[in-house]
Image (cartoon, rainbow, N blue to C red; front, side, top):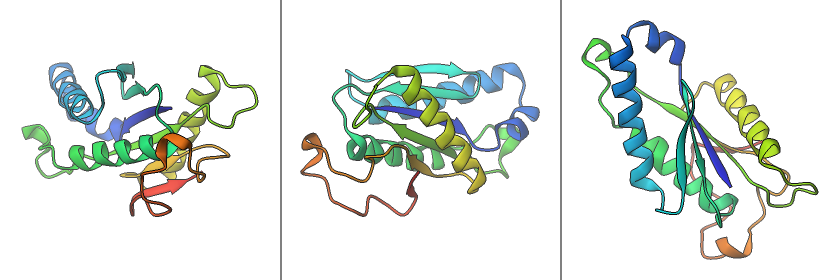
Length: 156
């Protein structure tokens, strides 16, 4: 599976921050991600406003739970001083090669990008789980609660 994380209302926030403040903000987000992923998971800056986390050996439900923990952790980060009246939130999209007839990295990245667009339409501060088998439990996830993963998790 992979997670793709984007700051909600990034363009608005970025207009209030200089380059150094934007870098510091992404440093804080990176630390929030690292706190909730395993050593085997790979978080990378995907674009100026996104962080991609490759999660080998993790199914949809496990990745959705991690994404929701990251979303919640970021909601508690204090924004830079110039933005103290604004709350910081992120949306995350989860996608996986599970159940894909022709799995590819490009396909799951595109699914996650579509998920982030859906999160933006819904107002942000969400986890969107993308894929045809997203609601089904995989063998690695049998010990996780189902079907309710959390109030801010939606399926696409």
